Length: 178
Image 1 (cartoon, rainbow, N blue to C red):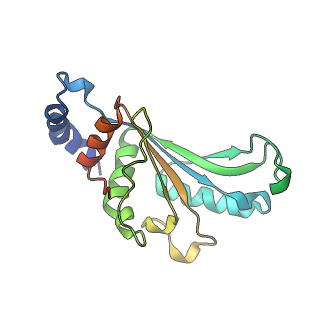
Image 2: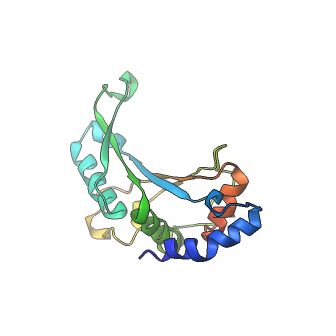
């Protein structure tokens, strides 16, 4: 399913070079990594929630996530330092391109009340971050095995130097912006 990587190398990279006015083809922005983060606050009370989130994120990403732990204790939330509270996975290479292709073509169109991604969610280094409210938009997740609907944060890191170059890259990859 490496169609997106081939399309980027053969079609999008040369067109982005001309569009952005870059002289060297190696300076054209590209995707470097995708980080998927799922916070599971209910895991402080019941560890089954964390196991379920790990299973779902494993299905979505195609590789095993790591468990993130609380950095400090928060008495009002009844959380202690070192308790497992979430999971994250970092995708690079072909798995990253497979995930981005599934995200753009299958998952995002299935989201409820979707009107486009926010074009202002770029940081100064050209990385794009957005959130998804439900994990059930991915076709790998079986509706019958869901105990809780959880959201996730997705951060797409690019090698772009500016916001404009990163936005041009993601538009070329068919990200549905507003």
